[in-house]
Image 1 (cartoon, rainbow, N blue to C red):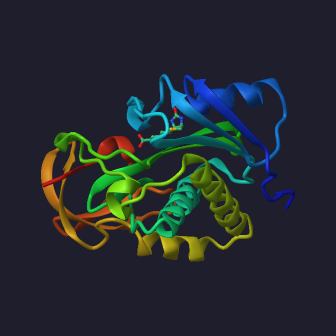
Image 2: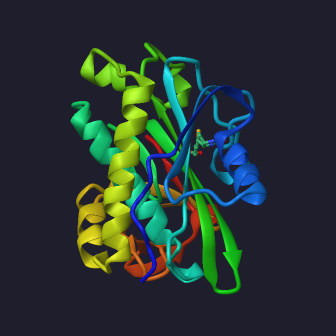
Length: 247
Ligand code: BTN
């Protein structure tokens, strides 16, 4: 194994379109160290999952990306979202916020979203050449429109948090969990993931291409697909195929 732990390479920006785009341009232009991390105050076109945009407010949000060179094949890529979600969850726990992981890697408290992760992989053949792990966390916002179903660290711990402190802590835990992954401790990571998985073994309402249904999340399969018990049958979904209906 050639995998090496993170190096403390930090790039701090005031404004950028998206830290994920900045990271992508950086690795196109030059070879950077594993764990190179970018933090910005403001993102003008932050990207979210499913082609959505990601809104954040200067000083009130964490907006960061980390460049990693995991030694993983493409079908193991979902382990990157497991380690990233665990790293952010642990950081939130240190801030006295007890968040759960909503599959695949949203961070929620009482069902309200507090953070999100967007991972963009650069693939060569069957292998992941590099990955950009983009992380956004609501830190100091005091309120959100009701229909957004969002929350912040401040609304849960009363004090909020400094983006720079949270940036270093997420980086530290990402290094820690990724190292476990690179050393083959996948069972341990999966156990942690399941311990914190939102709605595991709970009846909830979902929507798939056939419409609304009541189902129960049973876990993820060996490609990272979500397994849901739908009327007694185990059905597997990828991110585009299923949504949770919040009631
Ligand atoms: C989601 O939940 O939809 C994913 C949100 C990911 C947002 C972060 S903010 C830093 C990084 N740069 C981006 O453009 N997106 C990610």
